[in-house]
Length: 364
Image (cartoon, rainbow, N blue to C red; front, side, top):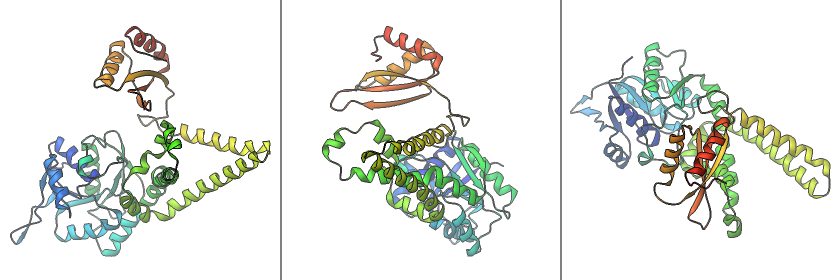
């Protein structure tokens, strides 16, 4: 199935990123959004040209695929409107909730044969077309949830979209999808927000002691609340189930800590068990290539807060022939330097440490 022309309705982060990825592969992209400013910016970024649904009194040309990149609550009505215009041969959406939009589309009488719901598991804390990237989906899972009514050609069109965006297709039912994202995305966002909310009233002393750990835990809490309210509302029951389980764990941990503070040394068992379960869960998160997570050695390097320092460090790694599997930066408060933590294969750590020392790098 070839995609020559694609319509993107909704030029936010996901819609514009998909448009940029398609444009990079030579696909003609048309853009539409209720916010003219968003369309204008997406167009200026090279994501495509503005869609004109009518040419005079006649409908515009029919595209091969329409991507509906709007909040979950508006997917079905947008699909119906596009189908009434005969805007595309096939349709998909990229909302992070699947069961409710599909159910609503059926209620409205949408043509489910030409529609295959989908969801790219990718994003950023920033929103809007200005945050879009053509490589946002590269190597990321992209769920597609065809119904029994879906035409095989419609599914083929969405699979081609996923391929062009560089993502990995994962076919799953809408209900299973929503339960899965509740565990790996939606509930973690609420949990991160709950932790970050404690910082709103924290003292300056506490904030001055904040390290990389709290930044890691609260990173996603900086996302748009309005956007996330729509997501959570569309997947309320599965998210609530996960949060209730998390809340139960936290309540038991808090009770154990109270008991420990009162001198009950046996209370450490409950806390230890939760921490151990956390390690097991963490280790089940797939590695960067989708397989089992790998264990890497971490080489810490002191770097100055100056232009070009990271480039020099990566060049040194390249000269030694060591592949950096992951990197994390931690800045030293009040000082013009920081620590770069380079994750490498364990058998390469010693050689890299010695080579960096020889090149003048400070490796603690």
